[in-house]
Image 1 (cartoon, one colour):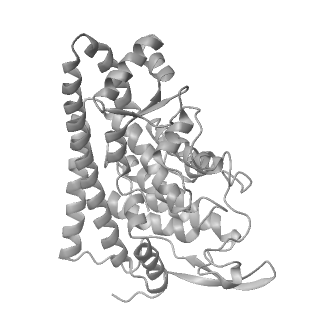
Image 2 (tube, helix red, strand yellow):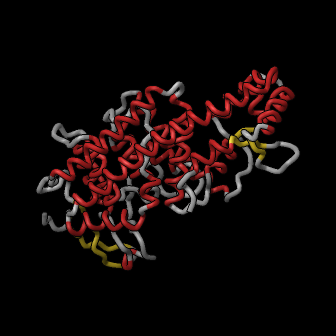
Image 3 (cartoon, helix red, strand yellow):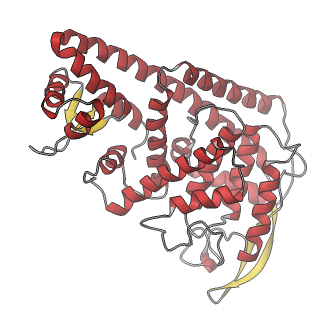
Length: 385
């Protein structure tokens, strides 16, 4: 299907240069998406994978346990795409008030992402609409501290930005001029709530591209654009627990991701992008189900090993249960969370170390931090490099 560019170029002056900025047409695409049999099969496969993910989270004894870990895994991956070096261990150390192994600004950026995602989801659960005000609130949380705090947190931009290159004149892509941002975002908001809008998966696919093309903020657009997908899927009831995040898929296929975004803008090839997106949803949902099964098996296996400790098993299990919720902790933190004395928590940790379930990660003799290593390893898969 031949559509041509999905917007118009506007000549604008910025930083002493005249450049061509791209203003996208409102959604949905015209002519409509071609939903031929192969694409419809992709869509149905993605829906089925989401259904299985929703079903397993409904059966989990403690869905919040997985939500805690997945939100933080997503924060790390989404921030790595933007160039941070922070790991999941760095984030959990930071949350313990312990020193991470990367620059402070890197882990602040990841921590801000957790706060932004949790704020957006909490607002939706309160019944607040998925709207531009919510996206601005999420953005304000994302840039609240550290890098980007001087880039108008919570406000649509009032100046020109660009993607790639050292200045607008040699940029790979120049988003709409500042005066066009509000109208473009208003049109996107109308699309999200239109009575004839497509189903949630197609809607999320289209809205993500549109948001990235508008690039409405001075900083943080990539992260908010990825958050938008999770917010749409949760808002539209695809998943009761927001456990589907595409950052790892986008990270692993980064070159193709950017190529397809550009193809939508230049040639109107929404279908190739949709195929890519639906494949990502399918792979990611299947991966999340597999991870949930593996973690449940790990917890059951390790709990059985702890039962062999005899009289020491009861306290070790209390500490173990806390580590299932937060897989990195100090003895002080474990004592507080379990209600055990410091000495009792320390003995329980020693028992878990002897079983090879936990590992001390600081090398210190005081203020030691212990990791539930097998749990961390599962969560970290694919997140490096």
